[in-house]
Amino acid sequence: MPDIQRECVLVTGGAGFLGAHVVRSVLADPRYADFDVIAMDDLSGGFRENLPESDRLRFEQRSITSPTDVEDVFGSRQIRYVFHLAAYAAEGLSHFIRRFNYQNNLIGSINLINASVKARVRHFVFTSSIAVYGAGQVPMKEETTPCPEDPYGISKFAVELDLKAAQEMFGLPYTVFRPHNVYGEYQNIGDKYRNVVGIFMNRIMQQQPLPVFGDGSQQRAFTYVADLVGPMIAAPFVPAAAGEVFNVGASRPVTVRELAEVVAAEFGVPPELQFLDARNEVHIAFADHSKSERVFGATAETPLAEGIHHMAAWAQTVGARSGSEFDNIELVEGLPDSWKQITTETS
Image (cartoon, rainbow, N blue to C red; front, side):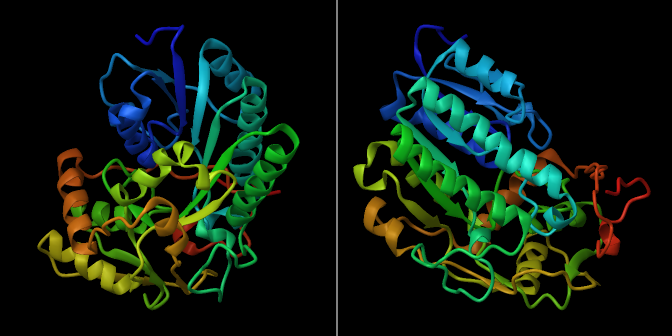
């Protein structure tokens, strides 16, 4: 077990998709060799088995939405760095779960910022999203004025603004990353509301058609997870990253239909598409990454087919997963038929 006297790195959402990769990278990075790692996760979307075995790693099944949980975690160890990855990242669904969205993605983040200020954390790394930009602003650049179109993007941008205020008021050092359309090993492929790559793989393994909203011409730059982690864990040690916002991810957008073809080909099956009613969503989304390259250096971009190959190999080892229905829908007006459930909560 980690030594209570040693300084620690906290990774929220540590048993989740991106968090599991950050935990592994921090444990392996010599810059963090003298630090233990705390992986904090409520397991609502993560899995304990995503985490490696290590004498330097401690798992805390806690929720960032609970001030008491956050205070207990900070009170039990000397936390020096925070990687805040915990979120419920379902952009389209966020319109219909507004209260849940803000509680998890905004209020939970504020609980962490408060605790970090009190603990005099050396650096707070936050994963935001290109959802903060909204529509019609491609390629998305950091100097572009954000105009989010959904509650998820609004909550992420609000946290960015609060971190800036906390830095100016309390001196909390921070860096914001805006990743986009990330896929890879440890993704929750059973979640039917988000992460289209995982949804496609899970459906193929269940011999089901691939759900496509609209005509599938939407364009996204899908990002293999390993391409993101390097700049994120380096940020606390790069002076030029302090107080800055960075787009990180793949550069070449493809259509959802093209993605379906790549995933199906990897599994050796023809792409059987199930076309659903179009959603209210940004049609084309990709970002400019020149700022990140200037500060952290250029990194190799994993080709889509290669990244899909790596994720598919992992997905086939864990097998298809059954995702639970989201049972706390707050608004049903305009909810896509494929997301409607028998039990809903209206408000």
